[in-house]
Length: 531
Image (cartoon, rainbow, N blue to C red; front, side):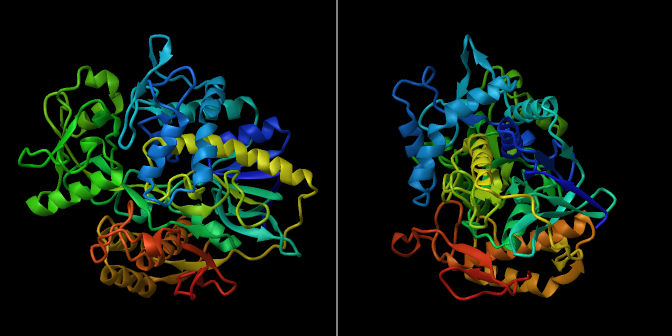
């Protein structure tokens, strides 16, 4: 190994969960090191538009409450939310927002109060926002500034490859590559994964290029369990740009519909009228599925979002307005062409509400984690809230666990590992075709076979190789779960099993890797893997 660094806690990722954890860990006296494979602001957080869903004691709609927010969350989660996790995380929301404001975040105001909007699945106006539709960018700015002011070291352009262990097998840190590809070790008794999502599994996504499922793969290789990976939320409204091959698509925040915009098909007919009691503000899985159905009927590539009736659109939604103008569309005067794209991973590394995984010393928070808050479909704007709450709780859990006597261990150094990788374009086309909104046993099996046949084992000596290996393993785990769940629930839709089956499937599907590197359903037989 060419280099080494030591800490009490290594945080992998610089989004809302990771930086919140780093700040809280520093407050608790922990030597904390943050590492990210790109620049500090390159993750998903900065792209979040809508806001933070929270019920505050002194500012809320008449009749709204944390309990009502929890009920909306459970409804969206389609029977798979963990009741205790929902209660615990949402109850801490208001305090987490106040900590964020104390760190310098500036939210939009309506007079002296925080401005609130409503998004899909919410029965009240409880989503606070910043910069109109730039909440994530403001959260990222505030947390990054606070981390810098606290002097917390951030290693940019350092790609984490593998967990490392000591002679007893205990977690001892992570193996990483610097920006020149030189391997080194970050030694620590505690590692927090806050790596974000897996949107780059798909050809069209709202996620940036860094969202390659790295945390899922790292956790699996460390021996942790993942669950609910089949529940990938597709955002109903991203800007349709003709001829776009693959990559991140501009998001049209759900708050646009919260302010009165409606979805139309290319014939000008309302899409959601009569399709759901909440019409255009139905949960995202419902809206995405209905859009997909209408596209099949009309043969069109997109539907239309008519926001021409919103007064002051450019001021309220400056990010969306600018994206539309760049594409040659004036949303003030004409409907916006939109379609759905992969947006958010509802599942991930199984943790408790304090970020602990089943592996001692390994923690996870944010989109990479599966706390049980989201169930089968995330309620809009619960994601930033979860990152704020669980990020802080994870730091506190690390401090308590280390106080019991864990020390920085000497890792057993191993060569840079090798793993199966798949051509990224092939992988994205395969997942988009067979593991998108409409799935079937035949298509999922075809996808698994295609990835198996395309896999090539290569040493993980570059960031690209690490990402491709993460995508390959995460894709196989997702396909395994999607094949097993023979029903349609939340954001998982099976054409061959269109109904919910509460008798068999009101539970999560959990996976891990065994010692031979095979994916294993914890309640069933081992299944094939590219690991």
